[in-house]
Image 1 (cartoon, helix red, strand yellow):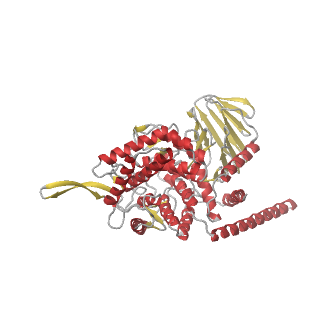
Image 2 (cartoon, one colour):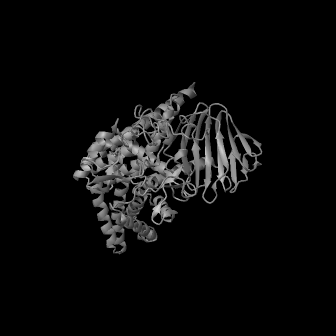
Length: 619
């Protein structure tokens, strides 16, 4: 009951805040996403181009789209050749806690929603001046009756609207005047026609899903970020296949195995087991580059590998292993373990073979987490070590005795410590060099610059080493000291990615990233430094796009960098951190006080609005 009250109050408070936001004409565009995904949690997805501009779009490799609804995806049909182009200049855009995208413009406001488990897409328009929506298709558009039209796609799409319109072969021009209007798209089904009931159904289903989430012990003010992050992850999942988009941004509209694994872990940690299960089952059946090894990324819509992208990134092996073990611990679903056992066996066989054949007893070089160089990476090796430990436990559960995996894990663990430890921190990457001595030469491993890296934090958070070990403490202190940038953590020294390498939306190098900063917070949570961790969670929320977390922040302005925002992994890390946040008496007291204050604010708002409306009637 308490959880339902909290969710209800959060939704009410967000709607009230957005009433104030909509009346504010000085909304800053950097605080709004340019692209968002929505889906019906079953078999359909849409891509919303909000109309908020991306800086230097052509330089950054972005397609030029106006405000629109595109990529209408249906599970067994793929992307339909239909788009809705909306003639407005968007000032701001955000995602509500009822899973509705709001577009704010000088001409009025538009809400876009997909009621869960239904075939409907709704556009609700409240316009202060005239505009238009052009619906285009590669097939004919015909009129059924005065308020209903049909696009002869496969499946058929019915359009039900109270606007006036004009049909021009494959184009439908909807005229939007001042007032309230709606457009209902019904995909493969007859129109519903009851707009108010669809809105109520949407709010009910979303509220029920949020209520089913585990309630973290966070202060009340951060619960909004937790629930919005969950919705963002859910919307960024292909509802049919289970793949996750790394971001709605078109350059990241792919399913990276690494990012997706953390999204699945976040959902299962929050209690949404079916959503996570879809991904693990998809991954266990995905096309592999060789037995036991996944491609780096896959097509978000059809799940096929992107064979053109990079070389192997071997962290996906360990992430699969630790992710499915975590899923079992939460669900006790032994049938699931038996189902994916053949995939686990392939991965383990690959890992053991490579460790045993390697001169250094390590997994082969790969591009690893940042995809910046081909080398032996601490991240990859440590994640695989955790994965092997997870498989040892899985085998014990299934009654499988395999001593070779125990030996391989032990060799890998010792090799990581021997090769990567660099005085007081773990070197991020190792390359080979040749030493000449006494007329002989030997190939050895040596650190490659930049050596200090925030990516060395998370494997330790996840259990590679004891958090209190000298290795862990020293590495943490070195990384945080060297990479702290205005309260967040840069990835590594002289990081140019958003500044002068491929993307150009940062005013300087070394932008602090959300995920790396949350790596730091997770460590602090687990060693009991609750207040420090809490400050980071607030810092993260304070630098979001109305609650949607970017990939990184400008190092000088601390504005979200728009080209890769929102980032699904950022939301996943926030959820993981939120659920690891320990409970304290002060937190519960603060939450209760916040609820009381929120109730008072809502009551006062209702009284003010009632008095205002009463005075207007008297006049």
